[in-house]
Amino acid sequence: MRHAKLVVGWAGRRIVAVVRLATKKPWAIDATYFTPCRRPLYLTDMAVAPAWQGKGVGRVCMDQAIRLAETWPGDAIRLDAYGAPAGAAAFYFKCGFVNRGRVTYRGTPLVYYELLLSRAKQVRPNKRLKLTGARK
Image 1 (cartoon, rainbow, N blue to C red):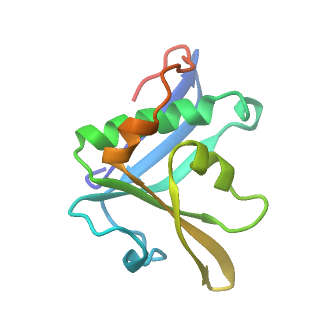
Image 2 (image 1 turned 45 degrees about the horizontal axis):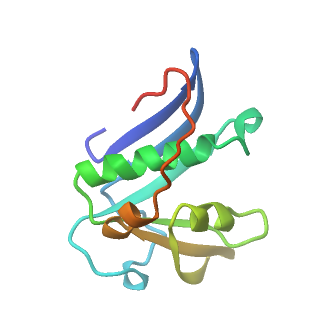
């Protein structure tokens, strides 16, 4: 993948989570909603196995993705999420992301979120859950 990198969460020999960061802007994101910056990165995919949800695995993967973005280098992480009760708004807020606006794309409500990487260093917690064999 030339334009993307993955963070993979492992528990033993099983993959339990994946986060994908990309340099290419997804077609459904309107950049005018975000803070102007030179090197935005886009979180385009994030998944945690159902049995591992609610155990801090997503947060560990997000912290690793933020570290990866800082060394890539990137200025911000941008994403869109479903703007419905089943969406991940609370999770992104806990990770330090800021709501940048709501849109409807082809009948689907979306919320834009952004994390400026200079701000990420200020909100990152000291304690981290460790997954066995976690690697990027």
